[in-house]
Length: 276
Ligand code: KIV
Image (cartoon, rainbow, N blue to C red):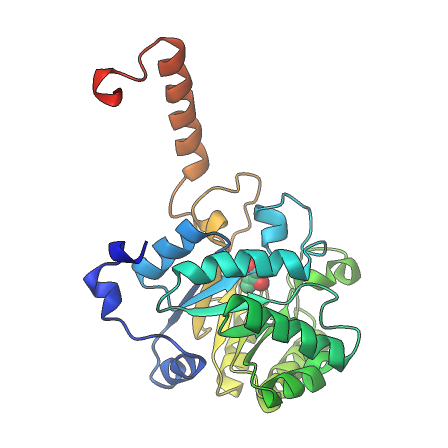
């Protein structure tokens, strides 16, 4: 399908992990959204998104599960391989699912290696701070770029017990700040900050040289990420205040489906020009 690629996209330079760090340096905001399938990835790349994440949020928006915990390594690899085919310029980051980097270093490196080798991803994303520092260092040693993820890390939902904002008490805020520095010192090229107070996200952003990508973390992060299905208004039952809906695809789709049903029932589809 490459022949449909616009001239604008052909002339764009591939975004690397280094590009994101440079963008922070010059104060240029980084844009990121999630992708799980070929067509959506293609639209995102054509639109000029800087970073695409094959997130384990696919457990929620693709598989219909309540949490991300059930997503397997094989499932994320399956989706990342599909997305890879459509991505030409964006930095392609793939989430490591729950329990794929928790047992020991050997298994973590092997699983991250599988993601890189089998999907052609540019980098992986792991949740956690101090706890994953050794893993991050090992991954970087073998040539795998790593993005961190702090704050409301969905893989820890059973410990948190709720999706409430993290880092609101001084002790946890201090730990998030410390974790961000540890991730930077371990070699991460960027950190996702999820659902923490904007003032804390600013402190983290000011205290590290690597870019912070916020989701529900206010305006002062170096970039922003949302789940694409949320910002397109596809996930009707999910309304956190950090999601801005740029479309209402749920409503528009249902209207289109109702019109199709009506047309078929009333023998209005197909017409002559739609027939052979
Ligand atoms: O899985 C995901 O989509 C994510 C983003 C929300 C950052 O981790």
